Length: 90
Image (cartoon, rainbow, N blue to C red; front, side, top):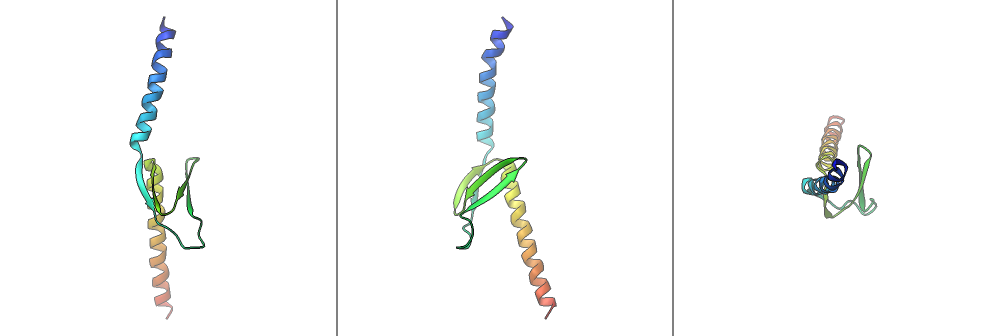
């Protein structure tokens, strides 16, 4: 019957989706912070939360890796801007 065939293909489809998610993950390294910082980095994208250990490599979905990259770039830009403002104020 068609219902039986659908039931058979659903688990295979779910299994294939699970494997695809695992294959899409990318490795990121979160550097250790200062002694007074949290030993983990909290990242949240579209309601999915990740708590990544600092000083270790972690495998995450591409959108999480992109958000980490974006946040690092924003922090670097802020540091450059602060340095420029300090030089200008002298």
